[in-house]
Length: 351
Image 1 (cartoon, rainbow, N blue to C red):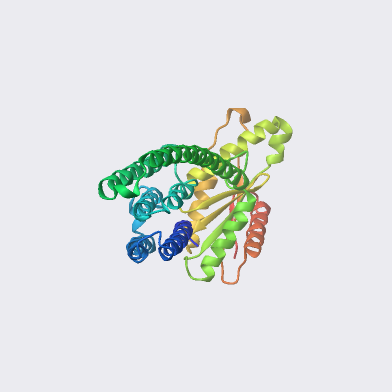
Image 2: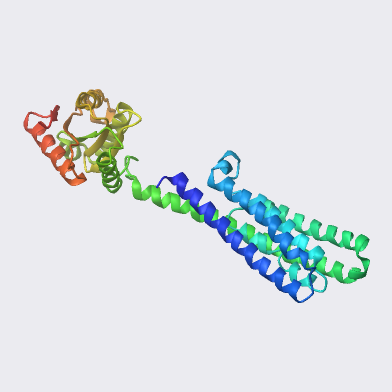
């Protein structure tokens, strides 16, 4: 599945969790109405209003309209909507107002994995200002329901709780970001060769299997595998030392990378061997790429080598129906062997 689709599915799952929270809250509201702590009309209208809001959010996620904004998760927007939902309940609750006050920190918990400290603080401030506004409206419209000293104590306690949740949420968010960067670094190290910086053998095998599957499903026009081996590389290591050999490998990897097209793929297979996957079904195109690599490497001038030239042999094999990554590698390796046998510094194409 495409990475974008995976992210959209994750956003939808988070949205479903929020909807489940709304449902649980709705059941609590209905229970309060049955007990006489909430007007009987509130549960129906509250469920209807926020049902419409969540339907709109579902359509936004379902059709990908959220991808047009800076934060595709719409986390902060959803939290602000939920804060308003709590304000409505707090205003209409009678003796059960304290029950619904405890719901104010809940939306912030959904922002822990997405929002930074200042964003969390912004949502928390909206909740506090909203509760202060509810107190003001109650004083104006229903003064008999308000004990101002109690409400001010509630507001002070809510400010403390919201501040603590914001700080902890921001800390967790920061730790999560650091872990994400560490995981990316680990994944990069697992996929790339530490010396040359190109992809390694493990990533090559995964890429070949993926490419073979695409060809089997007619999702690509074929590809060719070029196996490249440095001629007499052992002589360089034995006469000039391994540090010079490493310098040669780095230079060759860079020259191959500069010689292939943007759609092609380069990996270090092991030792002094590299593999290039050439996109497309034309063997002539693959041959052109191989020749450009061979000539480019032959033109390399490294002071550490002196007059010692760098030459490569290349074995070329094109994907055919029924190939696996193993059989294609085997045929390319056999082709490379024949290039070596033919005198090196040449390209051999599998018949």
